[in-house]
Length: 186
Image (cartoon, helix red, strand yellow):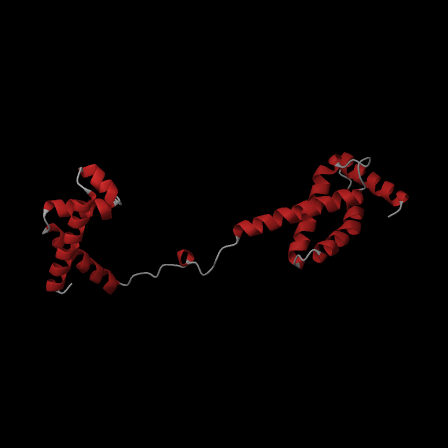
């Protein structure tokens, strides 16, 4: 690009900045858009992404042409720098959004059928009944550990019991629950 062409582009950018001159913008778009797209394709962007990014760069030219300073750089340098920075931003956002599609947490939960809901309700009722037959201290340990989410150490601290006693009571409660549920066939 020779000095005369640089001055011409600078004058066109000034016309866009000062008067929103659509003809000047069209000349700049027709000249720079294909060059920007070609450069972005060489940067390993897909054609669609490159076209979108070119549109963004040209929108910046339309809305912020007054920020272009011909004393600091050519219009070409200014536009390609904007394209480069937008491409880098796009790559960073893409890295941040990368999700593992195989992650079980992202898989839809299968809806329960009516028969499964009834079986689960029956099982829950059997478990509630079995838990209600446990001694009070064992019931409290199970409630703290499984419904309140407390660790064995937290339960020991809250009750003032030794950690070994807390663990023993929980283990005994599980043993009794297992026997009751096996006897009922649940």
